[in-house]
Length: 512
Image 1 (spheres, helix red, strand yellow):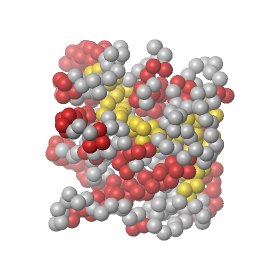
Image 2 (cartoon, rainbow, N blue to C red):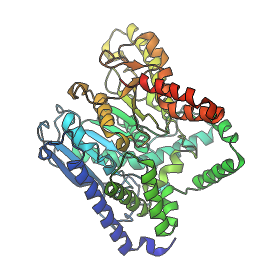
Image 3 (spheres, rainbow, N blue to C red):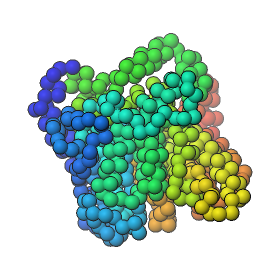
Image 4 (tube, rainbow, N blue to C red):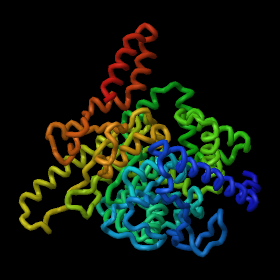
């Protein structure tokens, strides 16, 4: 890697380019993606901010980008609806506990806060008086110290439930806890600086994973937890390895090579930085063009590509959490499916957790269904315990209530693929469905078979307004395109007409 890649001059130029791209996306948020053609954007106050925070590292580490600072910072954008915010406070002033909890958005891996540029105005207009979208610590325009696990001592003594001789599991927990601390404690420092008693915490992909880690440690500050196509939910199954071993030899070889690089700590960002500049830039531009067909404007694609490119080309920091938190198959070393069920909310009825997946999402929606199933079973057990405890203070708080939503015509980057329907899903998850226009595109809601059989009102709330779909419907909705493509490959052109009719029938099922 050439030394000039991270020279002070090069870093300054990349920071300037990243800020320019951020400003362009922010302008789109204010002018292009408004809820109505003549919407008064002046009712919404947008502000970029740099919030000082102490570093979660145990000893002082110089930021690789901004130099030797007395303290580090989290960068982001805030949006205040002047019409609905009761207390349009300035930075650092306390937010009233009576005011609706603000929405805090956390981006995914190697992304940044302005990946939500298509969502900010609509969310502010319809429901949220205050919104914060953050650049996670170690990404975007936030501070980027070296990601040093030795300086991130976990705050717990390895799980007492583990056997003394289970050293591998203990070391895994220590490693994961240390990596999560990098993000969780920086987020908590930011929350303290803004004096937010509670927040509706929504995270995309890796941001969803880290949102769960934060809610585990600080549940008293989370009003609702919203997970947008989160990584690391399901447990690894034998079928996953069997499927890989059944692939052709050249694909297996490629997969094993990628796995080896992953385990050695090679990240997408570090790989990109190792390439010639022209090649790395063209790879990012091709990614934007191929992955995001919803972005038709060439200039918008260019600005988003520049935002992603400059973000990735700055010195790596938070990106190096990857192999410490996930395995090479994008499975979590400590899967969230069981961790979510153990979140201890201050609410006696349990925290609300909402999963939102895109129709064509590569992230496995079944992790959301399985989490819902597990929480439903635990809630049923806890309710039986509550019946025999006469004193309210003796009754345990219930495990989370879990909801699963599907957004049409969207993949993993659902905030860009279908921003209107994702906005509706976020607003519904936050309890604001009544504020949406009757003709506004709304997501689907899916429930596991146990919930349907029991008719549990906690899980089926809202079904009187919106149809709730079963697990079988979820399989058709989320896996339709892949299944039909597989069927065509197996049957050949002879079965094409029949499969087309099946696909049309499947799409019609979810049209209303």
